Length: 101
Length: 194
Image (tube, rainbow over all chains, first blue to last red; front, side, top):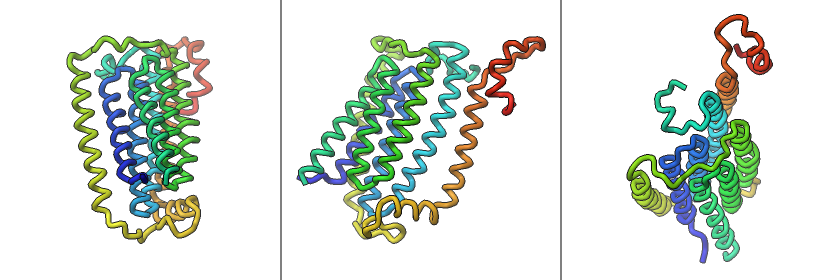
């Protein structure tokens, strides 16, 4: 029994869905960010799988850029979370719906 | 290849357990540690598919930097108290999320499997992977020739992110004059950016 490429895609579909559902269900902004990372990793896995299916290095280059963007996004997002939670501790995503800080 | 199957199965179990742990942990610290588990599993699958450089970068950048950043913020803000997941803030949200999850998995899996079926398997013209050269060399050649402009733009993005993080995380300056004592502790980090 060999590992088909569609198994990787199926796994990454499941991983993406777990991340998306977690993003919708959880209230803690830090955990929501972690769920975004799960979704980004699922997409990265898809890119690497197609890179090996199509025998093209472009998929891996895209994953490289996704990593950089993810790092930048986490830095800015955590800066925002620090600014909000410093002003009011224990704020959830529902409490900051007005963008007033 | 029985080895490949075993590696995939173990990595898949690690990834899924970690992902469910991120979503269902009551403590954010546990979520972050479960996230590390998932990231390691994904790195293993990268190695299994020949993307050795990306696997190393995945471990270094994600597990080494991003998760540590998460943990720093959790510890810094002291929000590592377990939250109560028993109550549902929005009525009917979790059943709706479960329905969404089933639909989403079905749709994405169908898309992926179909896409693999229709691919011709012809060798790529831009950057072929299997001509005997190491993965890092192939990746670097593509990155510094075809994708050079995007690579340079990436550096601009990183600078913007650094400046943005400093501006966001800086303690706001007190408005009335004569309140210098409150400003002094933050001056080292923020005075150049102000």
